[in-house]
Image (cartoon, rainbow, N blue to C red; front, side):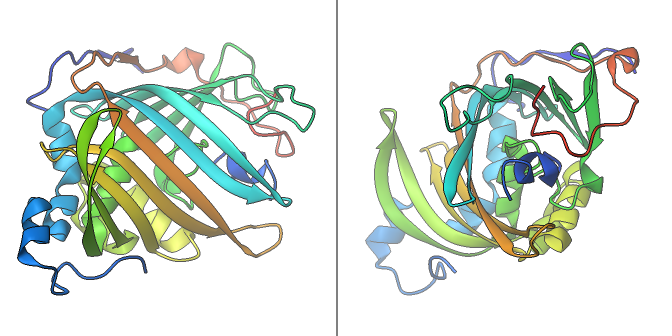
Length: 288
């Protein structure tokens, strides 16, 4: 594979579930439900229309910094996986450093993972499970039952926005601020199968896989848009079936986007740097 680099400075043109499972285990109303005219106006338009266009607004923005948090309950304990990095929405490439939870004694159980997000693929370094420290693991996202929405302990920011294309119900909650930026808060429910139908080709297969793989295709969410229609915060609630216990597991994924136009440099691994061996199935999430 040729080594590719993309840089985005300003913007106008613009595990598997095993990683999570290794750690343990209708919201809103219709946009036309009779909201007072002034409420709809202060929400800058029809909520469903605004939310289904959120991914396109990110492409127009070009790039940003991103923070992610994925929370799930496991063994009676709630754990959170956090990520931080940059994302290029034009080329749909991201780089995140992912920090896994500490053990009960307070010591870090795993080294931070480096994850590269690309159309149709997820690359992970420091994956553990017998993978050499200097090698990357490549996963084809369309082969994952969750479509890479919870795979690496993070939700791809662009894919998260594409889920909103499936918004069926949404309501405007009100105005608030995030880190000093005025935003509009919306609450609603998206349908993964519907999102897959309207998503670009390089995201469609992943969303279609998620629609079939999750316990339900319905995704309740809270979304916060700035006055330019750019997504600043998105909290989504997914439900999948734990393969070990055959019971639904709820995962809450939160994505924060900020510093739009910040440089986003992502270099994909060369073919010789990708691990081709077998990954130990009983290893912990990304642990060494």
